[in-house]
Image (cartoon, rainbow, N blue to C red):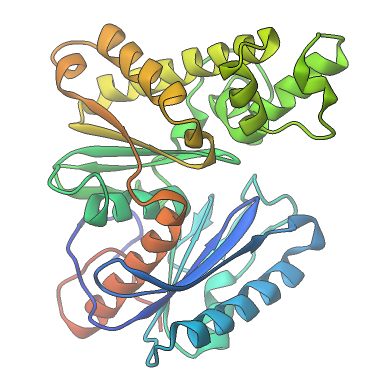
Length: 340
């Protein structure tokens, strides 16, 4: 089955699998059981500047420790989630913008060799969408969208119970919707993408640029400014932080509203580190969708925070690995291409 085939989402697999999530900020690993539960969870900084060989070696060392900590044997597959673009069929990370210098990294074959089991590779946000649909707030829906708002912005779509992957397996790049033509340079090379404004990286960059330009703010006292600092300062009434946060919400809300108009989903799920701001992010996004989306979607589309928290991509990696196990043991195809 090709990477672009539309795939029914069905629970599958009956043994523990290893799940690896490669983010621009952190690495996360766990053993995942068929009920979506995680065991032996380990999280460490990515330190991506060390180069992919060093980072991957550390990731695999974490994975071996995770298996030991979980106390579970018979790992039958390894699932890997990472930002795209990537090639799920060959297991290659093509050139993820959040991992500069990582070109054509054969993460799937390397994992298969390291652990002696088949691999399944999936875009991290797509994996997260699967996880939320199966085990999170998306349970019971038919059409659901997921956006991760983190180091970058990604997404995934389940339409009428079917995962949308696109013709080459990289569909759902919601972070690269243009919200301001000719605007800020995005990591993808284009200008004005929502990722260039609402990702955690971009929020922090915009704050630093304003501070370097002389804008007064309590943030100036911090040696390093993060998106979390901006949201906290905005809640406290800091004028610069309020301005930055309001722009973030306005543009992210516009992007979510556009997606609601296109897909008319029952639910939009927001996850990722920036969503730790909670109601400061969720409430105004809900209000924008309700007031600006076209009817009837404006009234029927719910917006909610992810139910699986920071481990959503790990659970998603586990899900695609379980689906691989099922696909190997039956003639019915599930959520990924077979690898041996």
